[in-house]
Figure: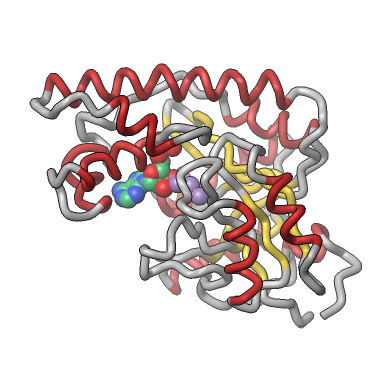
Length: 284
Ligand code: AMP
Ligand code: MN
Ligand code: MN
Ligand code: MN
């Protein structure tokens, strides 16, 4: 089995809900020994230029242009990674402007619903937390922590923002097919992020994978923090059976989340590793 450098194909910066600037993220990854890093902000390519500039000054470091697209599959929110995408490809401007509009509208509705549930209006603080980045529920979670309503962001999700809670506000995200199409237009690999985090049975997950393949997609993440050894094995089997490319990443957002670190996820070996096609000529 081929040896790979330390790599991480999923992480977030200030361009979405991560807390580090793209250059700081790249430096932190390099210091952690990571040599191939994909920056995959939610619905944004804005961090890539600064990440690329920082990466250029580091010896033997490869930056992969990536994105994590929010999309809908059968009325369920699914995250699709685009890895190795061309940020200059046609279609991004319109596609991402639509997502920005959807996120801004949803933020207003989240704030409104939380007010109706008895919380103060958090919109301005959440907007400030998001800065120029794509606004999302983590920015509301941070607002709740800052005002002392909860002690951790996790608690904010458990009580207010997580699945089925008042702040879990729906939006008319693009479909899985549309997300895959945009990634392919940009000549990237379309990969379903953290497949076991959608509350799907394995049989439904197989249907999701088949639909993604039918749309022209490429792979699934098989290893990420929180994946169990059994799920990791099942996902690898699924990848082999369906001829999917297998990807992995930390989904790093913040140094304060002690359970994630750049380049860290359960080890695995695969005959269908995405790195083989993402950077075919890479030598350690
Ligand atoms: P959004 O894109 O606004 O729907 O927010 C989704 C983001 O919130 C994810 O990418 C995670 O970073 C975070 N998140 C979602 N669910 C949870 C949860 N249950 N606990 C902690 N963070 C979560
Ligand atoms: Mn996130
Ligand atoms: Mn995700
Ligand atoms: Mn992510």
